[in-house]
Length: 302
Image (cartoon, rainbow, N blue to C red; front, side):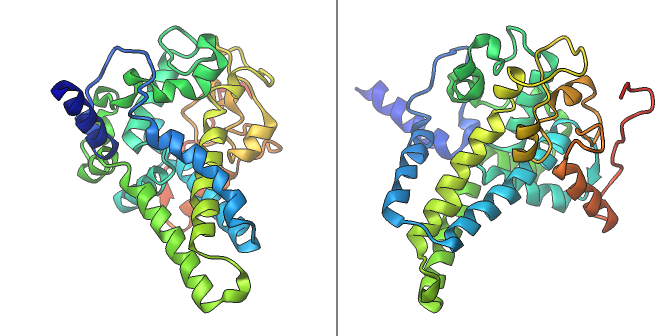
């Protein structure tokens, strides 16, 4: 009984302090640890209780879009691949915004992504469809082995105290966003009742639905973009270019391009390949928020 109580207590602590988790070889799903993840999906049903308003819909689009850019522009193209440079305060801001997506901390995310490129579509690639579509889509995210951050693969950024703190306590950012959404909704209900929204509605639309949608679209790059699409380049893996995913993920759907040459800021190699993330990062460079954007080298076949 005592050992069970200790296990439950450690699991509870792990929800808030990710560094209380040690690397494990167990490949099974950590059911106790993923209770918040399951609860978030169940909470989507609250949409039938809180109802619809245009303000709520706008909140969903805004929170989805800002966090999608934080994931694609910073979690992926900055922390994982270092395809541009930025100020430390900018990287901290977007590490926090990215963490509010409930996709763990930037260091955890980038660590796993670097391993993905090293072992793409082999037995050591945790989220390859060769292990099964469901495994590649989200089951890998939920298993014991994937929970801890392997700092040995992300030493360049792990030495930053702020990033390390945000990675360790990655649950804080989603909680802050949830509270902010609720607070904004209550404020609008109080001062602008004609908008027909409230705290509960903005919490559900601007946090719950937005977060679940964002998660499944993001991880579709691991699953869908390694199964359906076209292959322009022989990359020795199953990466595909998928135009629909490129729109939904702000450019990440040009996945075969990316696997062919991951060290460039651009994932849309041709002018018609829409890459919203690149456009935003380019605009940020104009005002000095980013610089050193790595182009596609001339020797890369295009």
